[in-house]
Image 1 (tube, protein in one colour):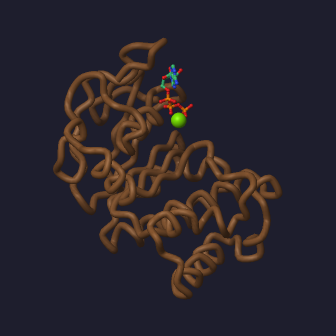
Image 2 (image 1 turned 90 degrees about the vertical axis):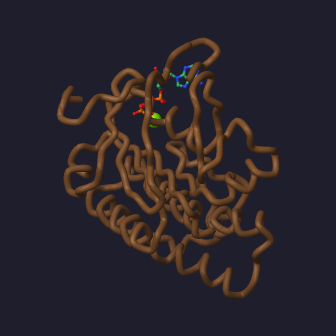
Amino acid sequence: MDYPSRPGIIRNVSLNLPAGSFCFVTGPSGAGKTTLLKLMFLGLSPSAGRMEIFGRDVAELSRDQRAYVRSRLGVVFQDFRLIDHMSIYDNVALPLRLTGKDSKDDRDTVQELLHWVGLGDYAKARPKQLSGGQKQRAAIARALINRPAVLLADEPTGNVDDGIGLKLLRLFEELNKLGTTVVVATHSETLRQRFDYPEFRLSQGQLVPSGQGAV
Ligand SMILES: Nc1ncnc2c1ncn2[C@@H]1O[C@H](COP(=O)(O)OP(=O)(O)OP(=O)(O)O)[C@@H](O)[C@H]1O
Ligand SMILES: [Mg+2]
């Protein structure tokens, strides 16, 4: 994978994430975790190699098929990407609206999820009125609202304390048990060690074989 100014950011990475699995992508700052997740949610195209999602080669997907694939992915961005002029409720409900869902049940689900992530009282607030950790939780609620087949979470606990981080990871675990494939990028060694899931460790854009290369 190349950025225009920086060729070869991700190299020789081969991984297979079975449906329903849970894994961590780890590695130090700048290792390529976010870049790898961007490839996975089709935000970037690989400059070489082959990538399949839901059993299909991404290079062969039509525009509609790409949109469909995207609609089945829940993404928690490292920088949240909440929409400033919309309320927290509307931010979280956005993926539902984009897929034409706005029933009473759907609205209840938004409120329930907000409550679950501890933002029940913040439905009407704007993103700029929230702390970093609260924005992160709003971003997580938005990623989950459409019951995605795959959750791609980039440092989803980077701005919350350990207690909340653990609680969020447990929520991801519950979702995983219900069938969602979960990929969590994190540089938090402590968090990762508390959960016994496979780890893909990156170092300078390459996978480090397990058991080698301390971060
Ligand atoms: N848009 C871009 N253009 C050029 N280089 C980029 C771009 N985005 C990232 N990079 C470079 O790619 C490398 C990997 O960055 P990436 O954001 O994937 O790392 P990361 O593992 O997510 O780091 P962090 O833990 O700090 O979030 C870094 O060297 C970074 O400088
Ligand atoms: Mg990153």
